[in-house]
Structure formats: C-alpha cells, structure tokens
Amino acid sequence: MTGRSGPLHGVVVVELGDSASAPFAGKILAELGAEVWKVERPTGDSSRGWGPSQWRGHGAPWHALNRGKKLLRVDLKDPAQLDRLKRLVVDRADVFLDNLRPGSSGQYGLDADSLRVVKPELVHCEIGAFGHAGPMNTLGGYDPLMQAYAGIMSLTGEEDSAPVRAGVSIVDFGSGMWAVIGILAALLKRGTDGAGATVQGSLLETALAWMCVGIANYNADGEPGRRHGSGVAFIVPHRAYPTADGHLIVSCANDDLFARLCALLDHPEWAQDDRFATNGGRLANRGEIDRLIGDQLSQRSRKHWEQHLRAGGIPVAPIQTTPEVVASEQVRALDIVRATSDDGLETVGLPLSFDGVRPGVEFGAHDIGAHDAELEAMFSAHAPSPQAT
Image (cartoon, rainbow, N blue to C red; front, side):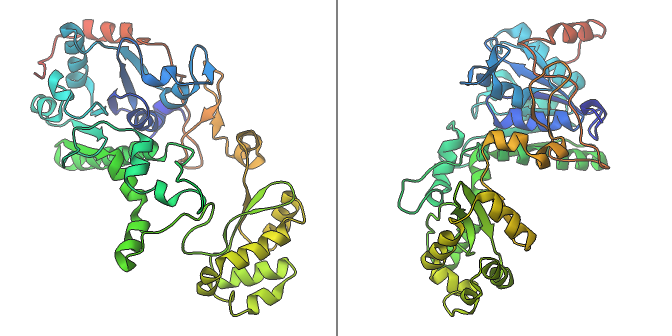
C-alpha cells in the first residue's frame, strides 16, 4: 500500500507550514494517502537548514518531515503567486493547514473566514503557539517554550538536577497529531452535512493535554509534583536501573509483578516486607527499594537481566542508543524504518497498518518548488476560479 492508495486517497491538502508541527501533520496525511501540496517561502522551510546531519544538501529533519509531498515555492508578498496559491485552495483543496504566526494569515486572505466564504466546504486547520484566545494568543512559540510553560519540564529530569526538555519534540509532533485528528473528524462530519469547519489547535494546548495526569493530581491534593528521573510519581518500581554495562527499565505496575520480580532477583523476602509489599509502601520507601533493586541488577549485564526478567514475565526494556534502535530485530521486523525509491534515506514511516499493511511513501522530500511546473500545467488546462480576498 503506497501513500497514494491509502485510506485518504482522493483528499487534497494544502500545507502552509514551517518547522515541525504543521509539516508533521502534513506528513501523516500524505502517508495516509492524501495528495499534499506543501507551500514554502522562496528560501525554503526552516528545517532545510537544521543540522548537523545533512542529506543531499538539506537537513535530515527536513527529509523526515516532508517526504511524500508536492512542493510549491510561493512568495506571499507577490500578488500573482498569492493568487496562484488561493486558486489551488479554491479549485482543489479539501483541507488547508497552516502554522503561520497568529494573525498573519489574514494579511494574505488565507485565514479561515476569508477562504471559507469562497469555499464553505473547506476544512481549515490552524496550529498556533499559545492558542486562539487569551492575552498571549498572538505570540509565536516553539516546542521547548511550551514544555516549560505547561509544566512538563518541571516534572522532567533527576530530582536534584535542573529541569530538562524531553529529548524529542513531543509538543510539536503532538500538535501535528492533534491537527490530524481534528481534520479527520471535520472531514467525517463534512461527509454527512457537506459543511467544512475551522479546526484550531496549538502547541500550548497539546502540552497541557500531556500534563492531564499531573494537573489532575495537583487539583486533587494540592501537590505540584516533582521530578523522578526515569521513574514516575505513582508506581514503584517503574524506572531505569543500572546494570553492569548499561541501563534497564523495569516496570512492575502491580504488587503481583513486584513479588515475581523479587523472586527472580533471589530476594523473595522483599515482597513480604511491610515497607515494600504494596505499591503505597514502595512509594513511601522509594529510595530504599530502588537502591536494593539497583544493587542487585548492577551485578550482571543488561542482556542477562533483560532475558532473565522477560522470561519471568516482567516488563523490561533496555535504554538503547539510536544505532541500537535502528539495528533492533524487532524494529526491523516492523519494517517501519524505510527509504523511498528515489531517496535512499531511511526515515520512520507511519506507525499504523491497515489490514496488516503499513502505508508506504511514493517519493522523498524534493527541492524547493519541485512541483511548480505541475501546478502551472494543471491550471493552464482549466479556466480561472473565483479567488478568496
């Protein structure tokens, strides 16, 4: 199943996105089979210059986020080029997706109110920074700002260290996912009533969604939460422990699993100790039980404990480096890291399969304006359409 034969085959998306959130949403839609036209400014998307890793003259992140899309070069300040973009939206698009700085789309007649006057059935999706309301709604923003502002960083890192950002762009990518969910819901609704919709999301709202448990905990007991490194606030053991040659995550989400772990570590008496017998007791004595488990695991290799504990039914996972992940037998069996036929760079595909088949990608990420001529040829074969103003 290639991208063009996926479940969204026939849906046309115009993506006026830069950096990560909207491009990630466009990538998902393309791999689900939509025809995605990505619009770039004349100098290209910001991610083309992200480093240090490069592939064919552009940053590797650009390729990860933009394969499978048709690429247009548009200077929004050029009236002719802006009209061409509007015509594409009015003539062909089911979805218009953007993450422009809040308020800027209206300067060009690309806001939802303007476009949906001309095309009421359009699904218009906006990804902002701080959201569409409130005193900060016109500010721009990036992933680390939202991890900080929403409190994620206050809960991330070791207890006695400075707050840290998650090592991947969880807010950017999460915002792209929420955008796709909103778009699909709007398209489903349009299938019943014929009406489009304006879908609004933001980086801050995504970050707050990831904080749903932390905020619920605070509202329940007034405790702000604290950092637990690789662990979590509400389960012990549920964290990384050092072995003789690396770290292993060990997760015992209930008392039965903990008792089984104790037996496998040759210390069944821990499960009978009043301090550790229940999760509540282990939470109250986190430092001591973590020390005991860590001391035991540090005596043998990571591979030994991974095999021994997994065979005993304990959920475990080694903390792997990127090379280890890419070479993993399990990851390779999923065939999720793959190259397109015209690109050669292996990137991560859609984390979904349909009837046992993972959607593929028809082509890689191309140069700026690679499909300008295709659009011009398309327009030359058809009469002009009314334009949004």
